[in-house]
Length: 222
Image 1 (cartoon, one colour):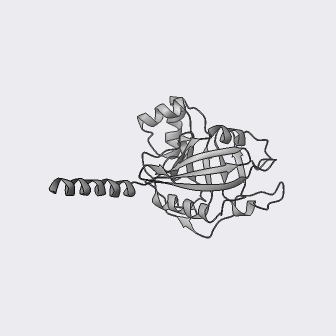
Image 2 (cartoon, one colour):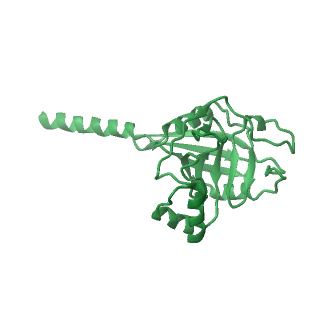
Image 3 (cartoon, rainbow, N blue to C red):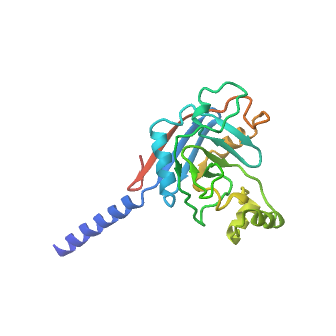
């Protein structure tokens, strides 16, 4: 009897631990293909805000309005949904910001999902705009310069990734990273290399069709 109770208690404990450590993913369908992203539990304010907007279909139809090869693709501007060709975008928002959530383990490696922001002392993030880092590879000399530019010391293991995989190290600890591409970087690469105008807006609209949020419960993605 006691053994049965202990086994039941252990099972309940495992279930509670699993529920507590639930993970989220976002499946982003674009005109160029599908991008699957992991949303970090260590940045709950950004994660939950992104999930909220995605579930409200806020991102359905918005454009990647800014693309810079060797750097990133940016989207999330609500004004972009019905924007005419050639119109400069990037000022649309939701009327609130999100406090910065900098964590040393989350950095601007290739595939990082991060929050855009206007220049502000608190480095608070836009309530809706985000970017995905396509990045480029860096040498040690270039990383040293990035450190001076950002005022942030790049960890040794991060340096290895910036040299071998690439990213945008000058943004570390200045813009909140809250996710990472798991699949579909080839889609981001296609978008970032689209022909663009003087404001870095693609000449042919690159649209987010929809974003579906998936939640991990007891080892299953639902």
